[in-house]
Amino acid sequence: MTTSNEFWTMADQTRLETEFLIDEKLQYLQSAPLEVIQQICLQYRYFTKNYPDTLGVLVSKIPYGNFKCLMAEILAEELGNGQLENAHLKMWDDFLLSIGVSQDELDNSAIPDNMALLEDLLELTKNESTLYAVGLRGMGGECLCQVYLSAMHKYMLKNPYFQKNQSDINWTFWDIHVGEADIIHNQLVRQAINNMVDAEPESVDELTAGYQKAKESWGVYWNNIYDLARTKQMSMVN
Image (cartoon, rainbow, N blue to C red; front, side, top):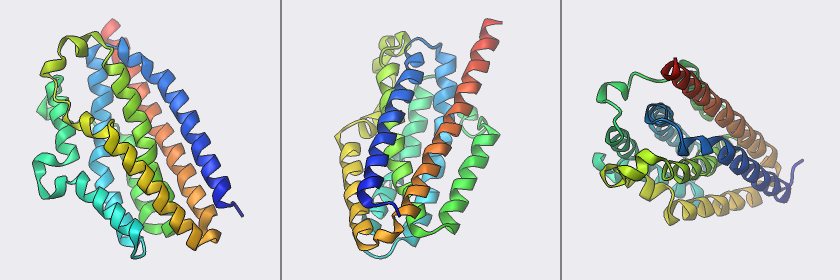
């Protein structure tokens, strides 16, 4: 049986490995053509759109307590605390539109394999154990996602298009997701999961399995995006 200390050692190592691999891959954004960056960011949109649905399912499964309240708070923030203009999907769409993505593209450009993957994550959240779902979407959605967003932001800011047009771009989404608030979220999630694990130490293996599935799914999701970006750039060259 995996201990809680072993789990967090694995999770920290996974995060470090993910940060290294993602940083290496996303360096491409500092020199990529705008059209390619648009496609990469457009594909991230579908995760942003799907996440509140799976998070809502997760909240419904979690026993009453601090972690349920925390996840419900994060879900409310994702949905703008009742205000559409403040919903994270709306903020992401505003960013996309400000870098030249058309309104028609927003709902009509998803990679089919990625949509199937997101549907699979939703089904796993519904049907697997609570701790598995916590690892899959509580940690996988909150903690791994932030690694990708931080690297994206860092390298986009170095891209000539973004440097030239910085004042015309809607950065609201990024102000929230690469700042102190998101770091605090991750720390709160970790502490709340610690409390759950302390109460049910025999469930660590399920938590581990869910988190590993999240890591695997993130890798597939982004590899599909990279493949699309390469195809897009090759078509521009030819």
